[in-house]
Image 1 (cartoon, rainbow, N blue to C red):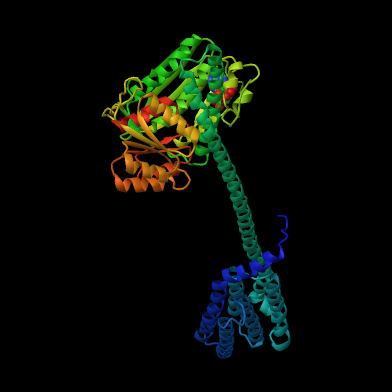
Image 2: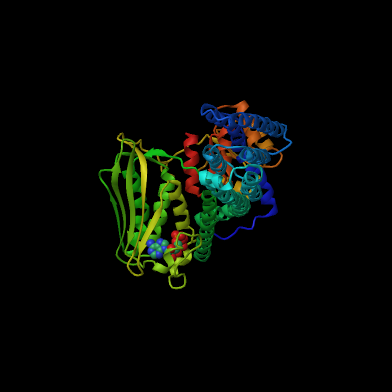
Length: 581
Ligand code: ADP
C-alpha cells in the first residue's frame, strides 16, 4: 500500500490518541508479568530445582522495579508506552542474568521466554524504535550472557528451545509495527474523514445561507411587486366594469388585464415556488369528498377543452372512499398545473385524468394519478430538466408557450415531494405525454361534509352593515372600498391603526378589514385594542405577505380571518360575505 505522508499536526494527534488507546494494554502487560513471573518460578520449586531461589529473588526484584514504573506512570512522569517499554527492558536484563545462572535444562526457561515475547507482541502497540531495542537486547544479551558467564555450552541453550526465543525476538518488531501501523492508518482515515466532514459541513452552511438569502430576496421582491400589482389588477377590473367605456379603450383594458394577470401569475408562481422550496409550506390535510373534488376540477377545465375541440376525460375509480384526507388546495394545484399543461400542449385528441386505487390499508388508500394527453409530447433530451424552474421546451415554435412561466412543473414536483412522493414523466415527441404520481392518503368511509360555496350572484348582505377598511396604501384602499361600494355596503376608511381604532369607537362596525403593516399603529396593536372593546366583531387581516408564519401570528393575535392580497374581486366577496352573515 502506498505510504501515507502524515502531517505534523496529525502526528501530534496520533501520539495522544495512541497513548489513550494503549492505556489498558500497557497496564495489562506490566500486571501480567508482576503475577506470572513469580508463578513461573513455582514450576522449578515443584521439580526440586535449586534454581528456584535465584529465580524468585530475581522476579521479586524485577517486580518491585516494574511497580516503580507503574507508580511513575500513575504520577504522570512517564507515559503508558514508556512504562511498558522500561518494564520490558528491565525484564530482558533480568532474564539475561538468569540465563547465565547454572541450568539443568533450558526447556522451561525458553518456553517461558517465548511465551513472554508472543504475549508482548499481541498486546503492545509501540513505535518501531521501542520494539527494535527490545529485540536487539534479547538477541544479543541472551547468547552473550550464556556464553561468557555460564559454563554451559551455548549450543545446549539453542537445542533446548533457545532458537524459538531468538525467532520470537526477530519477529517481535514486525508484529508490533504491523499492529501499530494498522491502528495509525485507521485513525488517519477517520481523522481525514472527520476533516472532510467538517469542511463539507462548512460548505453546506455557506450554501444554505446563500440559498436562504436568495429565497428571502425573491420573496421580498415578489412581495413588493405584488402590492402595486394588486392595485393595477383591481383597478383594471373595476374599469372594465364601467359601462360607459368605449370599445377601443375596452380593448386596451382587456390587453392590460391580460398582461397584468400574466404578471400576477408569474409573481405568484415565483413566490409559491420559493415558499415551498424553502420548506415554508406545511400541508394542511382536511377531509373532502374526492368525487365532488374531481367534478369541480373538471368543470373548470371543460370550457378550455371545448374551445380547443379536444375531449377531456376524468376517469375516477368508483371504488374510491367517500372521504379522503389531504391538502385539497395543494393537490388541486398539482392536478390543475398538469391538466392545464396537457390541454395547452394538445391540439387534437384527448386529455385524460386517471385516478385508480391500487392498495388500501386500515388507515390509508394508495392512489395512482395519471395525466395523459395526445399532444406534442416532450423530446427525451428535454425530459431530464423538465421539472427544473424556468424550463420551457420549444418556446420558439409553440406560440401558446409564451403564456407559461416555466414554474408549474417545478412547483408540482415540490408539492408532490411534500406529499412524500415523486412525480414522473413518460413522453415521446409527437406521441403525447403522461405525467404520473402515487399518493397514500388517509381516508374514511363516512362521506365528507359539503363545503358551502358563496356565490357572488346569490349572496345578499344586510344593507345596514358597516365595514371599516384600514390600509395605508391608497390604491388598496380604493380597490377594497370600490368593491364594497358595488355591493352597496357602507364603509369607513382609515389610513393607520390609530385612525381605525378611533373610527371603530365611534361607529362600531360589523366587520373590520385591517392591513397588518401600517404607520403610527400597526394592524396587530389596533386589533388587540378593538378586541378589548368588542370581542366578537370579525376582523380580517389584509396582507400581501407571503410568509406562512405571519398568518399563524395573525390568527393567534385575535384576527378572525386572513385574506392575502392581491385578491380577485370574486375571492374578496366570497371571503368576506360569510362574516357579514
Ligand atoms: P409552463 O408554465 O411554461 O407551462 P411548466 O413548468 O408547467 O411551465 O412546463 C414547463 C415546460 O414543459 C412547458 O413549457 C412545456 O414546454 C413542457 N410541458 C409541460 N407539460 C407538457 C405537456 N403535457 N406536453 C408537452 N409539453 C409539456
